[in-house]
Length: 206
Ligand code: URA
Image (tube, rainbow, N blue to C red; front, side, top):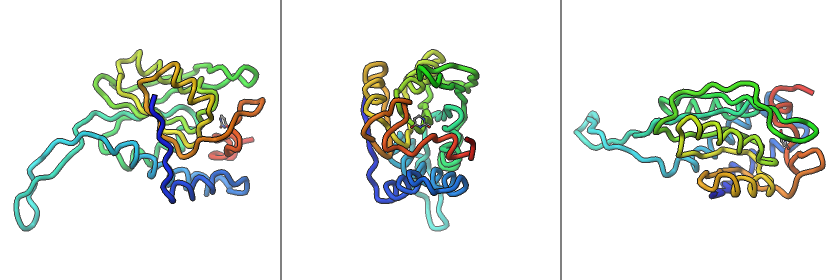
């Protein structure tokens, strides 16, 4: 598994705003979207392009377009926070949803909903903001692989060493792009220092 920690100054600035416990939900959502743009720029830097002839107001020249079927899969519900930026930046992206909740005691993933577009030959970007134990992301990767995907990338806001190790073991073929690699998990499997519960911070729930 390859891990990229994006250390662009904008990424670090936005991540700090997300970490700050006083950031209210509206600003948290807006900042998550901005941070997602910076992660996406890195995550898509190796996308293959096909050449297309175009005519500018002055002459004919060569242009480029993305030659891949791109699919985003949002892991519910926190993954929704990254989705606006993905839809905005990636033309023709189709979107799937993977509903999983973690058992508060065991932190094991429990599926409650999945819906995917055609994943054959697609480059799949899984939106899983908090890579904590890695259980949900590993489960989501399993699901998209079972539906035909084999080129898979995960966008995370924060990752813990335990989640990274789990992904290395379960899915060495997956690339993870994150804004921060944090220190540890606490006894409730929250990332430390982290940013708290991403879903609650995004949507103002308790
Ligand atoms: N999910 C969250 O929302 N936050 C964490 O710290 C870990 C998992």
